[in-house]
Image (cartoon, rainbow, N blue to C red):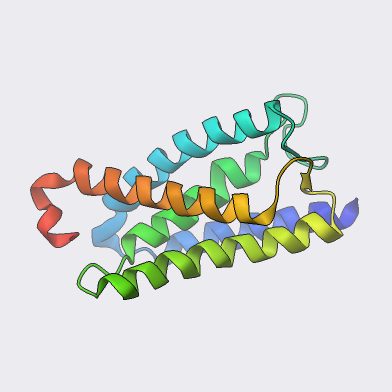
Length: 158
């Protein structure tokens, strides 16, 4: 179990470091994306663990919550912030689709290894493709929310 805690420390460090690549003029956009993603992931994460689709044997705040606090509260919202801030607004639809594909795959592949080789995540009635699909949908929802939220300046986001 010590390996799992080392992984969690590494992930927290890497995720907090990611915050420093967000440009100063995009911090407001990143914050809105972060908070919106937290709402989505906390709700979905709780539903997924309550329906016994996934379990997290090793996690922070295990006596409070059965969901993964690290993933739902920090990692995924920070990565979504980076996703939104660096979204390729003026590129082709194929390029934008590739951008979604790259982010979803970059989050799903490590999860597959974590599920297989650690006790950080355990698929009960879940599979990697459900992760990929839910990532794709929630990235789309977050993007649409940010476009709506900043609609007065959305010409800079489309």
